[in-house]
Amino acid sequence: MTPAHAALAAMAYLLVKHAVADFLLQTEAIYRQKGIYGAPGGLVHAFIHVALTAPIFVLWPGGGVALAVAILVAEFIVHYHIDWLKERIVRSNGWKASDPQYWHALGLDQLLHGLTYVAILWTWLPP
Image (tube, rainbow, N blue to C red; front, side, top):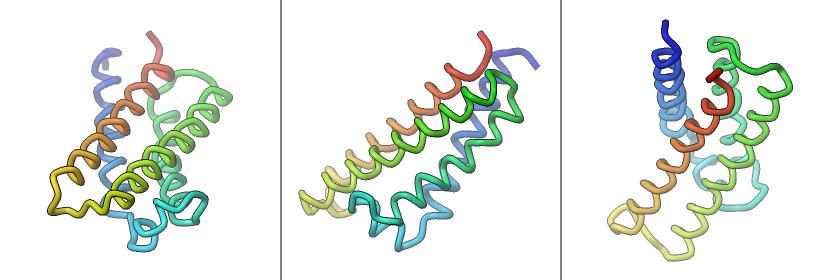
C-alpha cells in the first residue's frame, strides 16, 4: 500500500468511526449532557471517540507511544469542546432541527471534527 493509499484508508476509518460514535453510539443522556460543561455525557462521548481512534496507531504505524497518547489527549479535549460549544450556541439561541441555523451549526461541528482527523493523520503518519 502506498503512503497516499494508507492515508486515505486511515481517513476512511476515522470518518466511519466518527459516524459510529456520533450517531450510532450516542445515547439520549449523552446528547442532553453535551451542552453542560463537565457533565458525564459529554465526557463519555469524547472518551468513546478517543477509544475508537486508538486503533489507528496500531493499524497505521507512525510515531511512538508518547505521540499516540498526546494525540488522543488532544482529540479528547478538542472533540469535547467542539461539541460543548456547538450545543451551547444551539441551545442558547433555541435553534431546533426545523431552523437553518441548527443545520449550519451541526455542519460546522462536523467539519471541525473532520479537520481534527486531518490534523491527527498529518501528525501521526510518516511523510
